[in-house]
Image 1 (cartoon, rainbow, N blue to C red):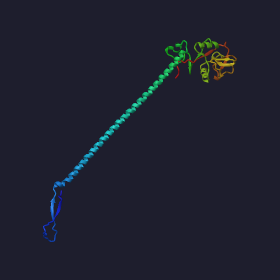
Image 2: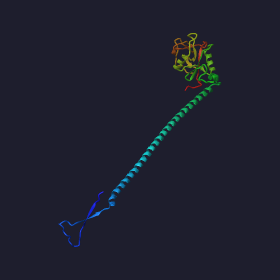
Image 3: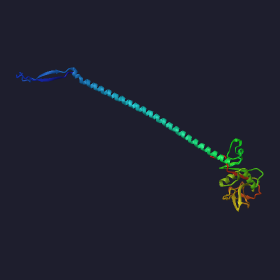
Image 4: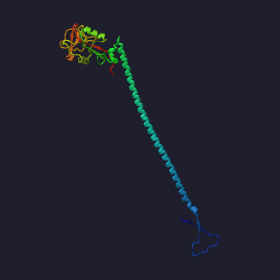
Amino acid sequence: MEEEVSYSTVVFKNGRQPPKEKNEDMTVYAEIKHSSKDTAAPPIQAEAAAASHTRLLLVCLGFLCFVLIGSIVAIIHLSVNLSDVSKTNKLLTQEKNKLENQTEEISRHKENLNWTLGVIMKFNNFPVNDFCPDKKCQPCRKGWIQYQEKCYLFYEDSPWKTWSDSRQYCKDKAADLVVIDNLQEQEFISTNIKFYFDIHHGYWMGLQKTDNKWVWIDGREDSLGYWGNSKDSNIYGLLIPGTNTTQSWNSKDNGFLNKFICEDDKVLIRSN
């Protein structure tokens, strides 16, 4: 490194004029040399400042990296926790739905048991063997057919019976002769009776003439009127098989022997 040279001006004041020498300026220059130690100081201080700045940047960068890594770890941890919460909520929802279904099922079982108990209480002597053959209970007694909330017995045995005897037979079974409420029931009955002997024989119903009106045994006046063309002027209703569904009724007197249909509203096991 080159050394810098500084010059100073010295003026003499002893009253004497300095000798002129070729009219040149008599200014005397004095060299003042600076030590190498003084000239080298500023660069070292700059390097130290730069090193200090670098260390500061490295510290800041390290701190930022630490914060970034911590944030990533926190996000991953939070994501894992949220996933666990989601799984937990899903499991809780499934368990809730399962419990609600079990509660509904228990409620249905309770209602069915109450229904069955109510049916049993309608009998003075409950016919266990008829409803529960081989210790397995069923909605209707053995030999009866269920339709909606009723049971029907289509008597096919012999001897055939009068209207009065037919009704008594049904009552002995804690039932009564069939009462037809609508076309759907009429159609159901028509599909379960069959032709026998001749076109004049059929199945007794719980229908009779009272005060010149056709009245069902439950006291309701008939409004269906599914009478055939050969309606007789007798007082007991008879359903003839193998005829038009809405024109299949006839009437006979009590001395005429026929098959019959019993109806019972005591269904032991309710349909869900």
